[in-house]
Image (spheres, helix red, strand yellow):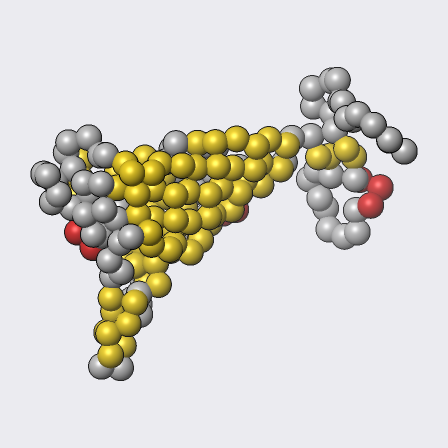
Length: 178
């Protein structure tokens, strides 16, 4: 029982052991020995990178608990699409994740993207124009997040810089394993 202060584990590799509470399967580790909070700098890139990208906002945060990393991202571009010269073009990606995702299938992850002061891509569905669902997608062992347009096609397509307004912004959260 603790009434004041912090629990400090003074030896690297040690932590809180939950092995006595394992319920099934063959868990590889029941030791919680890593917790971290911090920031990261999201960098919007395209297939073609031209002049330096200017940001109205460029913020990323994360919480890492064991192998699980939960990230958030908010970027607003001020010259993404023919505004004072093309800064980038092609597929929209966000680089700079704080940790490299796992190189096994647990390294794949997906999150939903919302727009901040940007034109929404549209999709035609039953003769009506509707806003497409846009996702953030991480491939295993890759520190860049692909932004995908799910417009009802058989598979998602890469969101293009030209589909953002000149001051396009993206907001997303995504959780993945390292």
